Image (cartoon, rainbow, N blue to C red; front, side):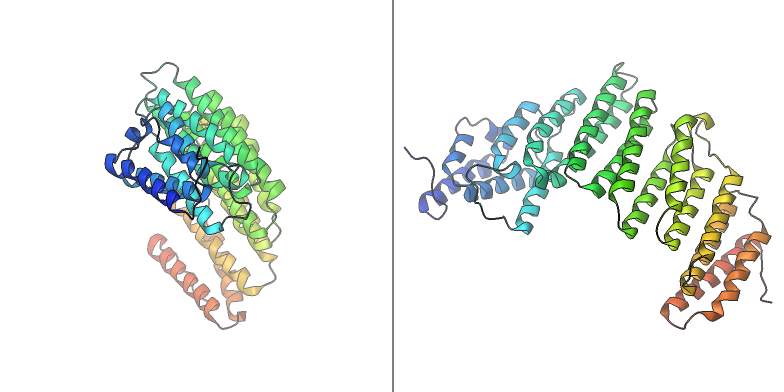
Length: 405
């Protein structure tokens, strides 16, 4: 009996070519899945040829925009694609080319979006079937494949939210999906894909917040807390820290359904974390970002209205100015002053009337005092242009002028 064919032999090439015939003929993966002896023939191909065939079929599904709309069909399809999804006993011991591997796994991530049912409950079964197969891919694959499942699950949450008037169990179903998302993100954390997990935790928190239910708030708080934990324990590079805390602040500023009990500790944590960044310029920028939470941030007690806590906004801005004063590099310090000047104008434009002309004038004076000491160059020219453009805007918008002394 023939157990397998060699990838270099004519038999293997002919068998592979033969298996492509029904794919090209039917132009429909659902018909292919009904062919009883199609998938078993894969076992007669060696690993390399089998993988090439799986890539061919996967590309065909994506290009033909074919949807696989039942969990049983998804199970059959992913079983057929096993050599792309998980390690196989007959695969070569030599490491695979990284570029080829990334392309193949990206295909798997893309084809997940073709596994769609118009029936929400069936869609959840499909997502669970995908999870069952894709988690077998090991740490090296899940960074490419699990994010697609996370976003499909988020989309399903939105579907149930839109159907909330028709489905009395929608809240329980949403909570199950959020727990499903948490399990996927936990797998990414376990595999130490810190940046990816942090970003997906924050995106998931926004979906939870959109649902506007008590249980979802609890899960959203957990998601933000886990993002903070990754930031504090796993992100060590200073640039990555600034990016991470900026994402956390921006995400939290967009939430609307946290109770004050949960909102207060999170916004305080944002400010504390910003103040502990290693580099002073990063501290300054992050602390000034926190001012937005106190101005346009929302919670359930405010019933969707912005907090508009003027005192906390100005306290954050004054703290950012104090931090910028501690920067030793003159050009960086002046650049920060110009950025903070623009922040003050932003809050004034948006109704923060406690931002006074005296505050703005003081900052303009600092910039003008320090500007002559900057070294000539492109960076200085950009700072000067930014400053002059800001002054022109202030004059046109607010009628404020600041004559040079």
